[in-house]
Amino acid sequence: MTRFRTLRGRLTALALLAALAAVAVLTVAFNVVLDRSLNSDADSQLRSLAAAASTTVAYDNGRLRLRESPDDAAIDQVWIYDGTRAIQRPPGSARLQRTADSLAGQARVFDDLPGGGVRLYAAPLTHGGGQVGTVVAALSLQAYDRTTDVALLGSLALGLVLLAAVGVLTWITVGRALDPVREMTRSAAEWSEYGLAQRFGATPRPDELGELAQTFDALLDRIAASLRHEQRLSAELSHELRTPLARIVAEVELLQRRERSPEDRGESHALIAKAAEHMSGILETLMAAARAEANAGAGRSEVGEVLARVADTWQPSLAARDLELEVQPPIAPATGGVDADVVERIVAPLLDNAGRYARSRVTLSARATNGRVLLTVADDGPGIPADERDAIFEPGRGARRANGHGGAGLGLPLARRLAKAIGGDVTLAPQAPQRGAEFRVELPS
Image 1 (tube, one colour):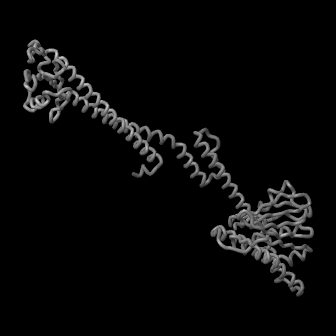
Image 2 (image 1 turned 90 degrees about the vertical axis):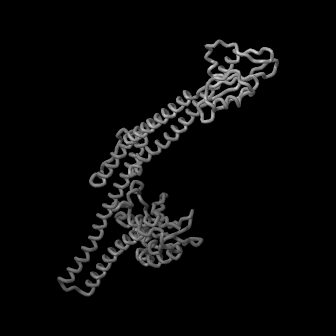
Image 3 (image 1 turned 180 degrees about the vertical axis):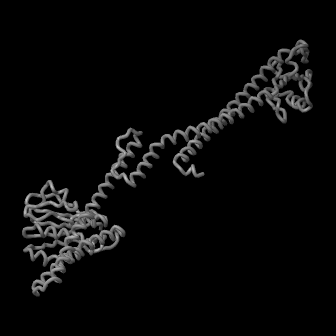
């Protein structure tokens, strides 16, 4: 039974069932047609025999008399009745004689001997338009029955042979057809251990398997790209966390080695706090992404309230850079299908990025559209060069804009990672001349 759990076993079983149905129908149809043909042949034989026997009978002076020669073989299989009186009776069993007598006076009637084996036919003898006698012919059906029995046994044996042949051929054919699939499975299992760069390639295969191989190659390419992205992100995170950690260690060592003025100590404490806050922000964003991936779609938040909280948090920081934060809440109430803290952590890197490059204004807006919630963070800075737009979401591959600031660092990649974890995305809107950069955050409603 275990074999029938496999695709090969199931296809073989299906083929056997289809073949069994076809063989059964053909066997029944063949034997029915053969039986009818033999019955028709037997009836024709009886009619011919009765017709031949009727030529040996003459009607003379109101009576029937025989005029056949003594050696006529037909007389051994025929009863001749004058009315209901038998003038010719061949030898036979009492049951056969009674059946023949019951047909006297009838015309064109067939009857089988009770118990089978013999068929009788009654043909009329006429004179002057009326029936004056009856010829009853008998024919043994043993040869016909033997033929039908042999045909039935032969057709059953042939059906069994055909079923066995169909089963074996289907098993072999399906097995050979699935050999490339098994080979692909073994290759994929080996590659999962140590051959991430391996691909199925353009090896000649049947069309369906060729499409499957192309799909697997594309899937492996996406997985490899995702792994490379994760490795790059891990490396950048390690570097990003190492820098503030080294700054904290250095400031602590300086504080321990020599006496410093209260102003210097206060400055060192501020640097340590800022570095720790930077590390905490990165770790919190990663934790938020992990929680969102583990519990996608949970939570609710009113987008207008989230924008107000974000404005209260970022207004002082942007004002210190001589930048104005303009908040445009949604016209109609918009509810996001995600916690407010997660929305803030997605928007925060975008606001920090906009604050670096804006000349005078940063705009934060939101609206509900097509069953989603769209947040926009725009600045009036120099914008992003066209040849670097695809690189800004790669860890450590941010663009360099005209004001000389470094690229996006890890902020934008982490923002997109967190947005995708909750079923959304962060994208860069098409850039118009002299309009700066505009980032769009798409959230589930």
